[in-house]
Length: 118
Image (cartoon, rainbow, N blue to C red; front, side, top):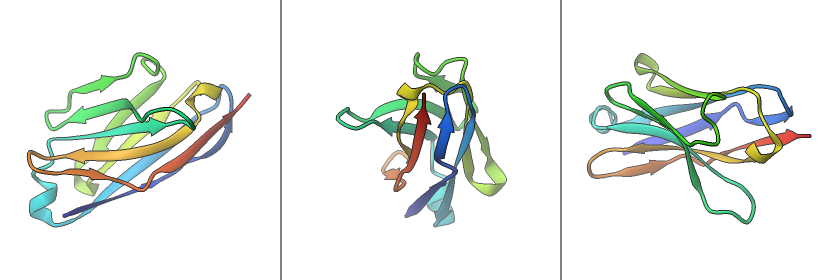
């Protein structure tokens, strides 16, 4: 089993920046089977949506709405994934969830609130 713990959310003004982190812990055998880690977000009244993914080989994928503003990265030694969010907009306000996928399992963190004021 893998546990994901997010941190770093908060309140920021439009145009500002935040970095959220997701630390994976648990069984080493489970962690090394993770193929991708990513960030999703869910705004009030909306469905959860993909924000960014980073794959085992280091390749990344972003939602069109965040391309050029958000950057996903990882520290393999710390089993941690980061999402650097720049030029934040009020429409980026949501609960941000960390996700990790292996061939057999799909893990989620508890979420961290990001609020962007106009």
